[in-house]
Length: 207
Image 1: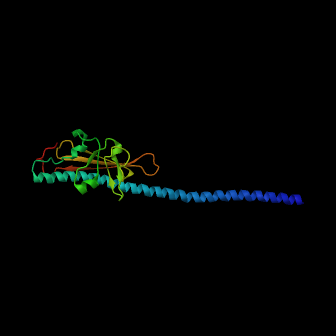
Image 2: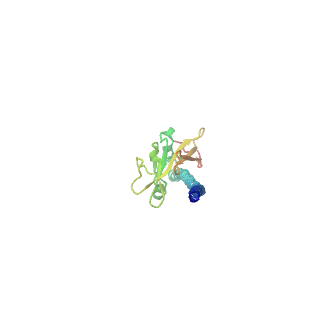
Image 3: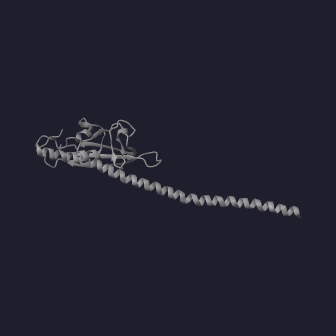
């Protein structure tokens, strides 16, 4: 009789162990589900944030090239005929002897009024960096490492310009931004284009 009682105790212990393992497995599954959902939601939030940043970076590139065009108009008003309406834009037009891809530092442009177009044929030169205030810059550092005082970002921006066929008074500007979010292996791309015109007339000859 005593042997049977002990045997029952051993069987009872074994059954409790199986129950514990099943309970742990259910608990793990219950935890992993919400954690996976939370991780995916966080990744989506970062991706959406990067998309918004990419849009503004591309738009900034377009606005800078318009800024150059408008400066040419102002200069021509001071000395009529001395400045071509799209002077400076040809630096980003490979068919007119410019760079295949070019970049620019908008912070420099609007603060010091200087023209800063850099050669981005080497993709490393097109990578944007941030200063201590969080402002984006595109500096011609000549390499993949950011200059001292700047933090490397995951954004690349290139700008191209091409004359619209059949007219000398219209240029097409294209700003392209690419980036990677998190551990994604392939980059995401965003591109916008805008045409600028010689709205003062056709008296100025293109370069």
